[in-house]
Image (cartoon, rainbow over all chains, first blue to last red; front, side, top):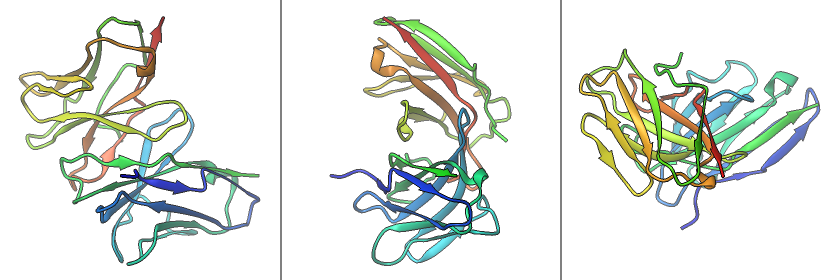
Length: 115
Length: 110
């Protein structure tokens, strides 16, 4: 049973380009969460999605960032016109139900470097 | 802002027990206490969670103070593979947003 998969593992972009990060949740999980982690810091919640729905995007910057979780295929976190401050590790997690008091299963992360 | 307070780092010898403390003085009555750990260059990994009673699983034990304002994660016999950053986390009111602090970096000495 494959875990949460993220790709690419490493992504290098120049300022102004678009970054597209993919997350495939564990089989049977319909809830996806995206987090951002800066060096030496804990994770910061960005967005919570269910299939075809954004439930909570309160942690996501209002501009340049968007997320989706289509009926078919992986969840996508898209960052348009990247800036150096977007350099970070981006993790997605999935759960079989709304997290509540159940664990979230994390992917290995995508490390984005903006030159 | 994180709702928990943890020491920045701790050291322990291999094969010895490790007690990782966490203060959460503003915890509400329905907040579960979650522990995750993150090995270098990896995604976080669930360790354990609990509400009031002490909890045990194959990875660790969680001791929760009677007033629930603090808890301790116990690794009974640390190995080098347990070297990681350990996060004590309370959820936000929404119950799915996990609020992460900086965690405790656990260093295991051989």
